[in-house]
Image (tube, rainbow, N blue to C red; front, side):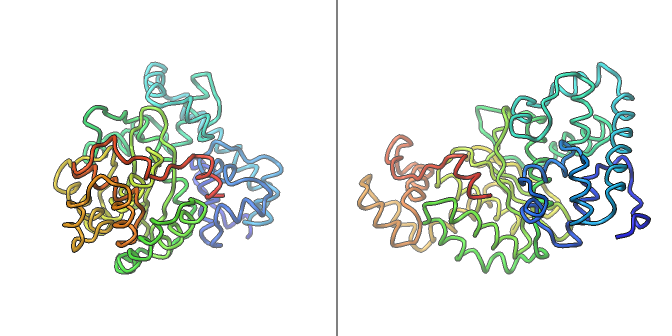
Length: 367
C-alpha cells in the first residue's frame, strides 16, 4: 500500500495503525506472528505499545501488512517523540501518584509493559499501554466509567481501580486482535447447547479454542487474561465496538465449576443487558438485579430448570453426583459447584470432583 495513503495521528501508537491493517486483511495475531517469525506476545506488545518497531519488524510489517519499512520506522520515532512530550507535560507529583495505581511488577512479568524503573519511563509506558495522553484521560475512560459499572465483587475484598483497568485494557488489546463476525445475539443463543457440551471436556487444549471459535462466529471475542495483583475479577463483559463484544476471563480459581459459571454469567450480560454497560465480576454473590439475572442465566444453562429438583435431593455421595452430572451432560465438578452455591453441600466437601487447571496448560491451549 502506498505510503502516501497513510495519514496517522502521530500520538496514536504504531500498533493502532497495525490493528487497522490487520482488520482490513483479516489477519489474526497468531497468523501475523507466524508470518513474522515471532510469538503472539510480540504482536500484542506492538498493539499495546510495549514493543517498539525495530528494523526487523519494520521490514516484516512492510512485507506482510503494508506500507514501506521507512513508514514503520518513522511511525515509531514520531510516536515516541509525541509520547515523550505528553509525559513531560504531566506535573511530576501527578505522574508519581498515577503510576502508583498500577501493579507494575505483575504487568511487567506478564509482558504487558516493559520492566521500567524510572518515573518518566513508567509514565510513558502507561500512557502507551492505555492509549491516553494524560492521567485525566485515563480516569475519564476507566476510573469514572467504573463508578457507573455493574460489579459482582467479593464482600471481603475491594479490587483496586488501577489493577482492574490494567486487566481490562489487556483484554481490550487482545480482543481487538481477534477476528469476529458481527454481533449476532440470536446465533449466540442458538450456540449455547453446543458450547455447554464442552463443559464435559477435560483438557483446555480441547475446549478453549472451540469456545473462542463459536463465540467469534456470533461476534464475541473471548480472551483469557491472568489478573494482576489487586484485581480480583473473574470475568468482564463489554462491547468494544458497535458490532463486537468482549468477554474477559481470568481463570481466577483454576477450577471447572467456577470457570464455566463465570463464562455463562458473562454471556448472560451480553444477551440480557444494555450493550453500553461494562460488567466486571468478582467472587460469586448476588449484587443487584442485573447480577441476579446473569447468575440465574448461568445457572439455568448449567442445570436445566426441569432437573433442578433432583439437585436438591442429591446426597453428598460421589457416585450419585457423577451419575446426575452424566445424565444432564455436564461435569461432576459443575454439579458440586452448584450444590455448594445453593448451600446444598459444604464448601469443603467433594472438591476432588472438580477439575483443576494450570496457567501453563491454559497458555499452551491458546498458542
